[in-house]
Length: 248
Image (cartoon, rainbow, N blue to C red):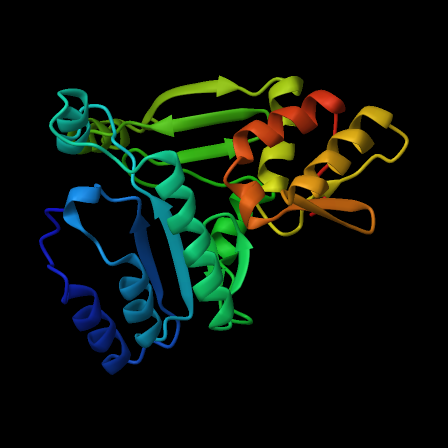
């Protein structure tokens, strides 16, 4: 995949961090690699577990426009995993990591007890956050803004006493409502279920029959299978009830 650290780099980094006294580490794992690489995903998951990290983040490989991989995919010189293999690898990670004692508490996040990410939790619960550094994003409802990415331009703006903002946008009520649903459904906190809305009740009942969601008290949360359909299900739920509050 062109990573400079090579296959043994993560293990060396973990050993160095432990030797330096760090007792809270997170590993990033990427799945859905091109099939031609013949990657042993189950074996890589086991090797990650052997490093005993407190937290693991899981990401499906994407081909970003303008990046080398994106160009190769566009030109037909590379192919990402198809939907079936993508789903199989995601669900295998869910099974192995949960069996090893990790809490799959967010679509891409697994943690040992007491080690959930507090930083990322700010994003998932819709709390405000600041933008510090080139390309960083900030959110202060209803405004979302992002900084200049170029370091020289960022530095010059600060030297001139200006905020290094590249652009900003206002989040309208409909968008905010959809974001609350999407953010809530991406975590095990789920979203509030309005039992008085027949359309929503029927929708969630269908999800349950398909194994995509479970209802817990007054909330509904997605299963690992449901998380594979997160964008679609969030839109369906938001349309079933236009304005919805998160359970967080």
